[in-house]
Length: 71
Image 1 (cartoon, rainbow, N blue to C red):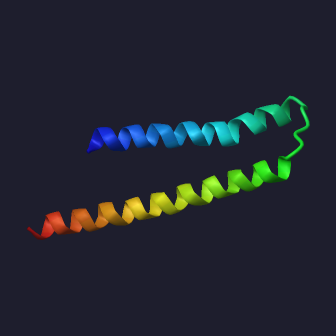
Image 2 (cartoon, rainbow, N blue to C red; image 1 turned 60 degrees about the horizontal axis):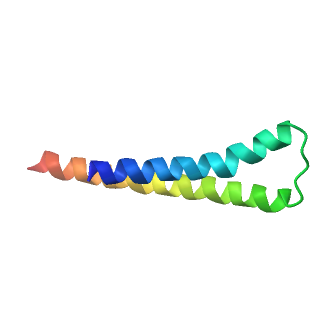
C-alpha cells in the first residue's frame, strides 16, 4: 500500500510541477502566454485539489490512529 501511495504522490507532484513550475518559469523569462488566465485557473484548481486531498488524508490517518489506540 505504501508503494502505491508513493507512486501516486510522485505522479501528483510531477503534475503539480508541470502545471505550476513551467508557466512560472516561462513568465519569469518574459515569454507571454496567450492563455495565462486559463493556466492560472488550472493552477488554482490543482492547489485546491491538493489541499482537499491533504485534508482527507489527514482525517483518514487520524481515524486510523484513533482506531489502533482503542485496541
